[in-house]
Image (cartoon, rainbow, N blue to C red):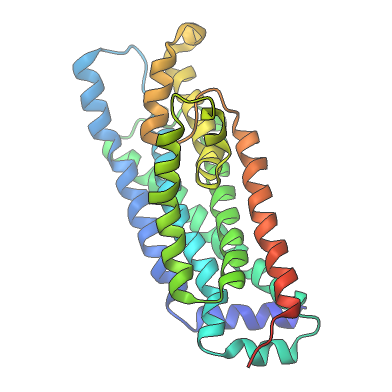
Length: 284
């Protein structure tokens, strides 16, 4: 098993895919953090707060929810690419059982997802620091920052694992790239909008994209409101929460841990499907 993991890492680092997907994660993270300056300017025009706004928490949430698509694409392409270049044949012939190949892929892609997650949190925090000034209270308490940052890293890792399962199922690189993009930014968005103000509105937080976004956003938004409102948080209008969730993802009054469990279920389903299909798939 250790030899398979080493072989998978050699495959990853012998191509440009891993760092090509890392670049937009870093850029998006930094830009999301830098946008904190704009939000400060807008809010200060409306009302003068007596406390620092922990916009760094929202910056990490925003950058994570955009950056996870690249972790997903990396995981999907790392497996589907083996079928495109026919390297999967030699891998399956030298590894027994085939499930060990999937396990090695999951370990290596989880590691890369961890790297993406750490890079995202660090560069989003750097952008927020440079954009909002050297006031560390822009990140809330150290516990808040570590909680949101940890959730961001975990989210990135889980998206990479889901991508491995998806790539193993579809085996087509073009489909592995197009399908997630169309689903997340078109299909699920359309479905979520159509469910609003209906009796099925409660289903929306359990869709894959919403659940993945909620891992960070459903933690960051309440922490932000709590830091700003203080003892008056229970009196904060629901509209304030919903406006923040609209921009930064997540769902009002939906706990982050429930989003985590929901998304874990999706990731596990794709990985289980990949294992089941991979055992019986013919390779040339």
